[in-house]
Image (cartoon, rainbow, N blue to C red; front, side, top):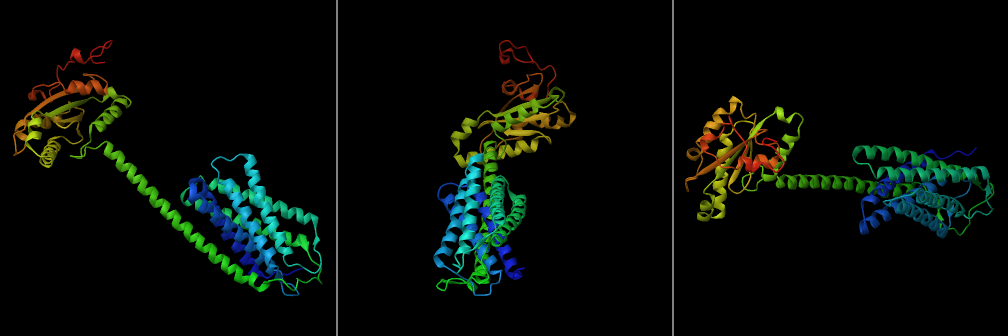
Length: 427
């Protein structure tokens, strides 16, 4: 019974694990890239996986001691490497397509398995032994079957990983790489048993590659290469995560800007309408009445014509801050237009708002600017008395009323002008 060199067996398995891990990652990246970037990932994935499997094969061959020095034909060895890389690249190209049917999946599996089988047996033939090999057909068929199963599993996992992100993807990738490496090594060592040479056979004297370079030195080189590739994948993961976070923050910022007034930082018109829709849509909305109070700077045009943009913005900011200070806790204040503000007051008849209403009735004296007196006009509406739609409540609140009426809702009625045809008051 042949005794294998254990360190070389372990080295061959480690190479297979790293090759499988890198190839899985590079293959999973293909569906999220396009153009030149996709070509780079595809070439890198094919080179890494093909070179890794090829290295594992020759390190594994060196693990089985021979009575004579092991040498290899340079051209046939290079051809075996090219077969592994080409097959891996072709398989990754197919598996990286956005849409993949059963036929293409089978084609990718057979392409990859075929490349591995050709690489393995051509690599063994590369010794150019003095006697022809002997085949065990059962083990030969088993080795081919293992190659097909390993390739299919690898590509299926590639496909699965394309839809995964974060730590879960890395964990699945590691387990998958271990399983793939076991299958690759299983195919290799089964194939070595399937193809044997007579004990008296020796490699060709003119072989260009010396066997000692195809063991540990080759394994070390390949492990270093794959380690660099894995560092690249880690950096890529970090870069993608950073880009995703930046994109999320930018999307959040843009979304916020769409609902925020640029001058005062208050919620804008869209934000008010959105808040009204949410309040009106909640279950049991009629059991939670509220009021809208409209506060408009009546002489805003005079202010704007007498001031520059920066001075006007400063005045508007001062006014908005004063309004905030005059409102009760929980009141939603928004800047509805250049001169107008809306306050959405929940439970508007609650006694806790009494002081706020009193201050707002004195708004002409309380809120203004040193540069020019500010005059106010106001209006108000209440849900559900004034209506049950955003538009009607806003329109009703914008009907001018005496400032002394702010916060006084008793006897409130709806103007017939605010009722749409076919509807009744308060509907």
